[in-house]
Each structure stands twice: as C-alpha cells, then as structure tokens.
Image (cartoon, rainbow, N blue to C red; front, side, top):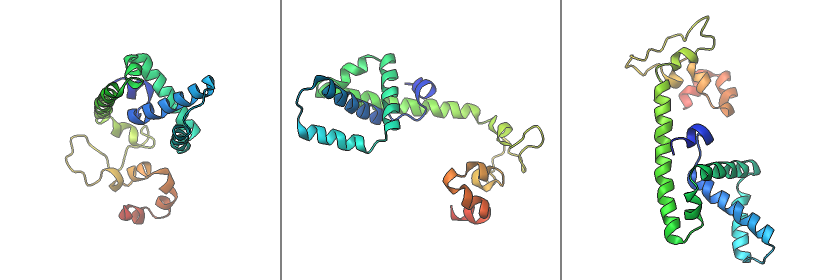
Length: 172
C-alpha cells in the first residue's frame, strides 16, 4: 500500500477504483461474451458509470491494473464470494489508511525545506516576512502570509483573490 501513492496515484481512492474498474470489467465481459444479461444489472452499472467521466474511468482502470500487478491475490478476492469480498473491503480500508500515512510521512519530510522553494524567485529574495521551521507562531502561515496566500488560493478563486486579497482572505 505504501507504494501506491508514490508510484501509481497519489490520491487514489481504493474503494472507488475497485468498484468502478470492476464495473468496467463486467461491462467489457458482457460485450465480448454477447450473452444476455439481466437488464436491471445493466441499468445499475450504466447509471453508476454515467456519473464518472471517461478520463476518470480510464484512470481508475489503469490504477486497478497496476495495483493488481503488484498484489494479484486481490483479484481473487474481488471476484470471489461474499466472504472474500468482505475481506477485500477490509484489506482495502487498511491499505487506504497506510496510503494516507505514506503521504503524510512524505509531506513531513518536506516540511523543513518547503520555505526554501515557496518563494517566487528564491535566488533573488525569499519570502517576506520569512518563515522559519523552528518558529512556533502560526499567525503568518498559510493564507495569512502575504505571498503564500496567492499560491495557496484555489485556481477557481484566483480572480477574486487578485481583485481584493484582504477581502477574499476575510471571507474564508
């Protein structure tokens, strides 16, 4: 599980990935076999997949394939009986926790160095006011920092932020 956020997809949701990829496999199998399938099952599958864009479906399928290459026994659990599927969900939940811990560990290792790279042009001038790793005060961190606020602003709100930064930060 620790290698999934590092090598496959940093923010992969295993439950979603397995659910969507298995539905896609099921759909592909029904097309290939040409056999008549239960109409209600087909409608439910199509309804779920209709809420997921094609690019997201492809990403989930790619992640699913890569995960199964690293842990092939999960396929047996995914296509097994109810007890095996319950075991799969338990394993996926544990793996999701481990993935979150791996992301957190990776981010914590960067914590001491991030101030060096956060400045727009660190070779000319650093952040003003500077951020020190050993400083316990949080008053000028995140959106409260005059330079970091613009970098942390979500792209859909950048225009509003640049029109009036103080007003935008107050509205948060």
